[in-house]
Image 1 (spheres, rainbow, N blue to C red):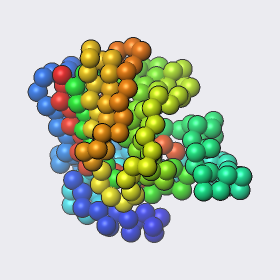
Image 2 (cartoon, helix red, strand yellow):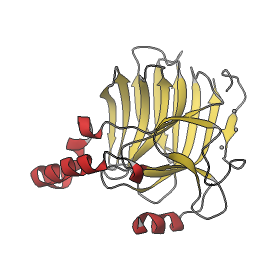
Image 3 (tube, one colour):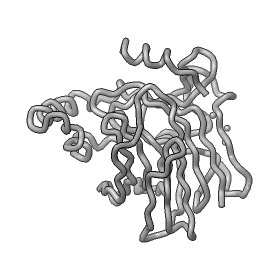
Image 4 (cartoon, one colour):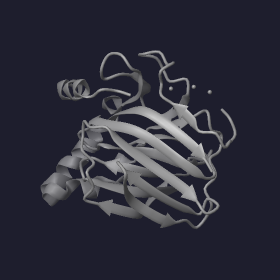
Amino acid sequence: MKIMLSALALLALAVTPVAAQTSAPIVEDFSTERLGGPPTSFSTPTGFWSIGTSDGVKPALFEDGTQWQGSQTANTLATQAKALYGDRWNEFVDDLPGTAYFPIALFNRVASFTGGTITARLATVGGDIDQDAGIAFNYQPNGDMMAIRMDALESNMKLYQWVQGQPSVLKLAENIPAATARWHDIVITVSNGGMHVSASLDGLKVIDADLQTPVSGQIGAWAKTDTVVLFDSFRVEPE
């Protein structure tokens, strides 16, 4: 916890209600949210989301992965993986059943996103098992979804897809500057009738993929297991 608080102190931080997709940009900067309370501009089916801050002034969407009850089991898996695989242990615990826990906060102001650009400014500031965070999209009522996620421990980005609870990696970008305790801008663009997705990190394009079915679903903030992360802003520019 001391490490998390010190990391929060290093950051200078930079949440509103459901609408169908329109052509005007929709921007949430969390400035009208109440510190310490639950977010009103995001619904939270999973996770420990609240409105926090790293500078004591400006609100931000905060996921506190330290409250995850599965951390003990995951830590056991991580210890075993470290003994077997050394420095590459993270790669082997990514999709194990014991670490299949994904905090999600769905953006209430967009009921269905079918194309355009989503931008999130975020910083991971803690996590023993994972420091994974990013943008969820194509979220369905049964929990099927897609996500672009940044991994600060593995220095990579992935395009993930979940179908009936089973994750698969559609694209992987390695050796990217995904540092902890630093603000990053993740941008997702969905085009070609919802059949193509690209993503960039801090202006560097790292993901480019064609999809088998068009995107049409809810969007929001995404994290993994015990990740501690702050989202400073969330912007949607519909196609």
